[in-house]
Image (cartoon, rainbow, N blue to C red):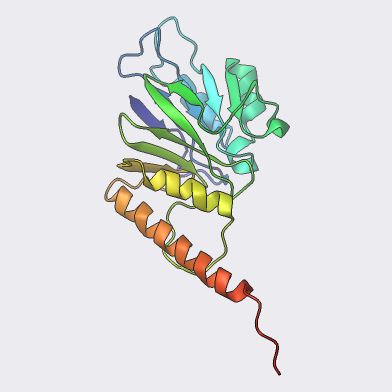
Length: 211
C-alpha cells in the first residue's frame, strides 16, 4: 500500500491532512481511497498528479473521519470532479454509505476496520489496518499525556479497543505521523484517561452530611 499526504504544508489555508491510499501496483481491484478531503482547493490538482492506475478512476471512494469543516469542506468539489463513493458516520454529510462501528472497508490493496471513537466529535471514527499496523486517527485524541480532563465512557471504551490492537504507525488529522512506539503511546494515553475517570468518579461521589 502507498500512502500520500496531499496537504500543502506551505498553504495559508487551514486544512486537515488529506491522505490518498493506493495499492502497491495500482491493480484494477485496488480501491483508490481518500481519507478526508480537507479545506484547500489545491488538493484537486494534487490528486490529478498521482499515479492512480491506468483505466481506473482517480478516486474510487472517500472516507470522512468526522464532519468538521477542515476535514470535509472540499467534499462537494471532490464529488463533482471524481464521482467517488462517500463514506461518513454522520448523515449530515449526505454520504452514499453511512459508516458503522466494526465495518470493514478495502482501501488501496488493504482491509481496514472502522472504529467509532466519539469524543472530539460525535461522528468521529478511526481506521485500522491489521496487516500493516496502521491507524488513521483523524482528530480522535489518541495521544494523551496528562491525567487531567474529562472523557465520555464511549470514548474510553473505544480507546481500550484500540490499545488491544497492534499499532505501529498512527496517521493524524494534523501534523506528522507517529512512527515509533505507537503501542506504548496508546497504552500511556489509556492509563491517563483511566486515571482521569477515577478522579472524576471520586469527585462525583456524594459526601456525608455534616452532623
